[in-house]
Amino acid sequence: MIGRRPSWLLVAIGLSIAAGPVTDSLFFTPPAVAAATVTTRSKNASGKKPVATKAATKKSSTTKSSSTKKSAGKSVSTSKSKKKPSTTARKAVSKKNRKSSRRASSGVVVFDPARPATLRAESAVVLDRRTGNVLWGKNPDERRPVASLTKLMTALIIIESPLEMNDSITVTVADVTGAGRSRVRAGNRVSIGDLFHCSMISSDNAATRTLARATGLSSTAFVARMNQRATELGMERTHYAETTGLDAGNVSTARDQARLLDAAYSDPMIGSLLRTESHSFRCGKRTETMNNTNRLLRSRTDVVGGKTGFTRPAGYCLATHSGDAANPSLTTVVLGAPSNSSRFSESAKLIDWAKKGLGPVAGETASSHRR
Image 1 (cartoon, rainbow, N blue to C red):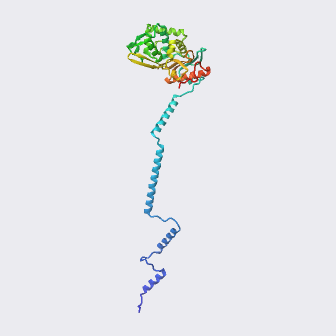
Image 2 (spheres, helix red, strand yellow; image 1 turned 90 degrees about the vertical axis):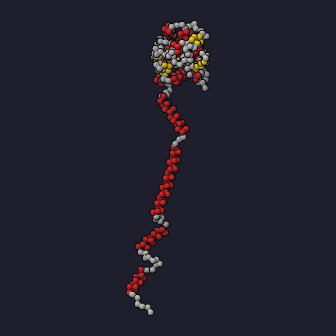
Image 3 (tube, rainbow, N blue to C red; image 1 turned 180 degrees about the vertical axis):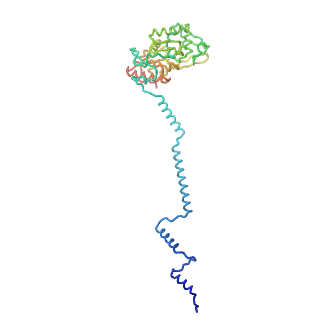
């Protein structure tokens, strides 16, 4: 027989039935939490991304950051390797830039006879020897120091003397003092012929002084004869102070120097020396070899002779003959060119320009330039 149950138990059972069935869980799940769980499950079932935990989020972020850094590092490395040229390439680019800079600074200008300023030499003249006419000039009558072009006149005076090419003379200390670089030395006994080669081919000042002394004339008498000969040749604006051209008192004009070159070249001995490219001779116990200071003799077939000159007051000078060796048709003179190379390049421009107007120059080959 079952006894009577307490009233509070009946009330609890009634409430339980009203709330729903009893679960296996020892803890009661509140309705609010249950509702949230159901909502989350329904979202997952709809295919949306589940909410990641903090640990997972941090790990994923770290992985992505590391991957991004590696990718960036690789990109920078690749970029650097592409931008950084090799040492050889850098040197080549640098050399090209320097050449371009030099070309720009040198101010290379095409010669235009209508614009004398396009020739950088201070004065110049182009003479047609067949007619005696001046074809073109820039300050052709301006008096200027002429440096070693003086030696052309010295050679004419030496040729007038009774000296023989096989004669010899001893070089003195006075001959070499202040003469600059020379093929001969004090105490050497050298033939007149070899001294003549030194004076005309390598513009040797010591050799020139020795030759002038060998004539037996005093320095004063020799220079006086030089000035007298200049007057005879019609060189009205020319004056000489000594025999080598080292003295800035040796002054002349481009037009007068064209006359002088004609007179000197007409002498067989001087003419042959002005055409000679090189010469070797015995001097004491050594053999001396020299090359003509006129580069155009080696670079052009139409240049058949000439003489160079240089001092600081005079600048770079050059007088040339071109055409047939036996009878040149063209004389060019440039005085006061700004550099050694420019006196040759500007003389070449004048020759090429004159040839276009004169037509074929007698005795020249199809190409005027040596290969």
